[in-house]
Length: 261
Image 1 (cartoon, rainbow, N blue to C red):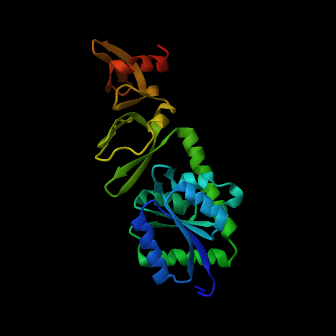
Image 2: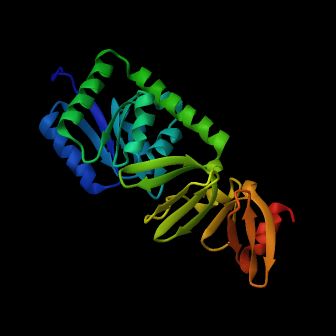
Image 3: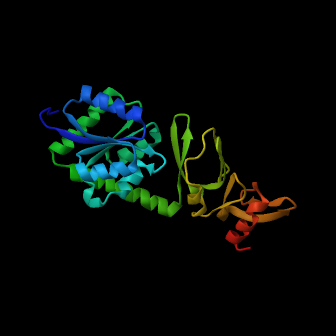
């Protein structure tokens, strides 16, 4: 690595301790890296990218409540995507997306010093060989691929697992039960999934992509509804896989409107 050449970077992470930890590691073990700014949200990150035109961005994937690092990249005009990206996240499931697109690298939290130095070496190589625009194109290709996949299959759901995150698509799901303290999912193929963590998604996204709410907790994929059974206290829908889901009285009219009953 050529320590005489300065690498200008931004750090984007909603967790203060993670930002401070990465700053500390870069200053101690990669002293020729110049940190232009550290920001905690998508809005400030967008401004910082336009202001500083960095060589690279260390980007956290999950950044509630505004969205994800991917949402940030999608909000940047392609003409300004002339930087490399190093994704940083506690969810290892994202690794295949980042590395497949060669966005440059992926660093799981907590960040390992050796991994960080290797990532910085790659960034220097991109800058030294004047390939930062290529890195930007790779990021754009990643976003296009994700957009096409989401358009074809509806909403992308990120399901927390003990060792990271599982990514599924809404068309695979027959129904969900979402409470403030847990998430239960029944897949169309009969598989079930349960987590003690609530699903990180705006429920309006589900309703805009073919799901109907049948109670305060239940969301059913309308394409899998086979029949409706009337009950005194509301009713229930029968799905194509044989499962039944309760329909609370308050949500009955909304169900009928969506199913055109």
